[in-house]
Amino acid sequence: MKLQEDVIRLIFGLKVKQLRTDKGISLTDLATATGISVSYLNEIEKGKKHPKPSKTAIIADALGVSYDYLVSLKLNKRLQPVGELLQSNILSELPLEHFGLDMSRVLDLFATAPAKLSAFVNTLLEISRAFDLRVEQFYFSALRSYQELHDNYFDDIELEAERFLEQYQLEEETTPTFEELATILQNQFNITIATNTFDAHPELATLRSVLIPGATPQLQLNPTLTPHQKAFALAREIGFQYLQLRERPYTSTWVKVGSFEEVLNNFKASYFAGALLLNQDRLVEDIQQFFAQDKWRPELLLQLMEKYNTSPETLLHRLTSLLPKFFGIKQLFFLRFQHQQATDSYYLTKELHLSGLHNPHASFLNEHYCRRWISITLLEQAEQDEHLANILVGLQRSSYINSDNEYLVLALAQPAENRHGTVSIGLLINENLKNKVRFLNDPAILNRLVNETCERCPAPDCLERAAPPLILEKQLWQEKLTETINGLIKGR
Image (cartoon, rainbow, N blue to C red; front, side, top):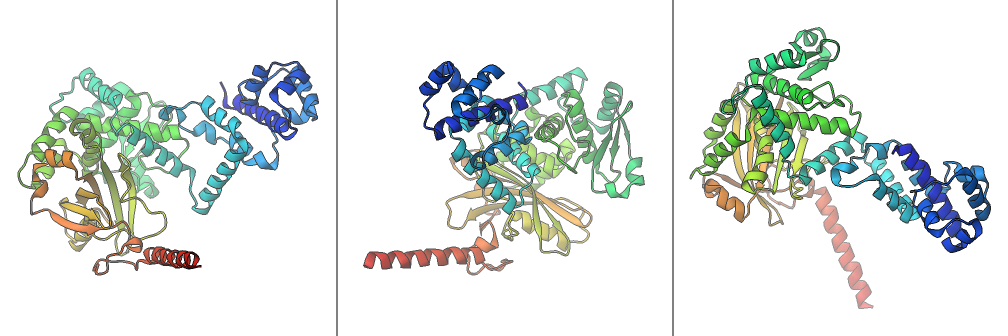
């Protein structure tokens, strides 16, 4: 069923219901006047049926309007926001099916309370304009919700990765090499690998890879990539091809987002790459051994990255899938920070929160993230050492001020030219985590009180504070003022 047909039926039904209600006509009265059954009229008003022209003319006469008005897509001012929403392409882009919804339920909602929904939709549009929320932000938020809904573990893609290894006779006990992946990509999918496009176009320097489609597609790799970054780029491209994901981006970094399907397929291809390069059975065994250590041993993480020839981000992001599934550690978050040298700005460029944990969270209000976070601490350490060549590893128990939440946060920092970055994974400390991680109480682990942003932090003696607590002070002023006014009212 095409969306446009749904829209025509729904707008027609909204008009019929609004006119009937405004005139104080019941469905039974309208049925008597038109000779159309109550049940059929009810289906019309819900946007499920659209009458033939002859019956439409009869309904128009009974409601006292012209035929042309009733069949047009124009709505009055009260319902205009809903009409604009219905006639836009937003509904067609909503990933409803991924959240167990279908269009018929949405249409029922519009038909049940159109005026109230109109006001609600108008409010959402005003909020989006005020905060300059773009469509792609909505897509990425929808993807994160989709991941959270599934605890970021997808059996179907894991099985496809296993089938791929078996089909192309790759050993599960070893990580596929760049050479093996390149051979498969070229021989099985007719995609060649090159680097010359990056040499000829300096403006592409921020991208890791670009696929140039054609009779003989080319996967152009940025020549500055590390070996594990190159392997991941190939594995991701194999994911697109092997999973037959047609609607997709052609660049590794988003330049322009076309649809939610592109965002979802990009995630699936990346998830496939992680599952292919970091076999779940092998990695689960290694994580079990890591958690079983009596003491915190950061060198074991570096050994894991070397064993799987992987990057800090790929390793930690893979853990967000395996820890919930195999360890029952579902309350966790993943963060990726970047920092431009010689500035005081830290950017949260990627995040994932499972089980409703939303602190810390990305701030779109230009607030200063807490400088006590291990992620930012490692960034500062990396920048202090101009000759840093190795990955920095940090572990911290972070307790949130005025909250019962405490996290075990593992962070990895990797040096990069002009722009350092860290990735971190935070695990909520509860009884399950205490049973799983033996080194949790190692005195070598740093314990710190943290908050989300400086503007909201009550800590009076914070040496790392980057901004005064303006938002907190305003909240306290409002509370004090409310308390005073309530006291005056009660005293009368």
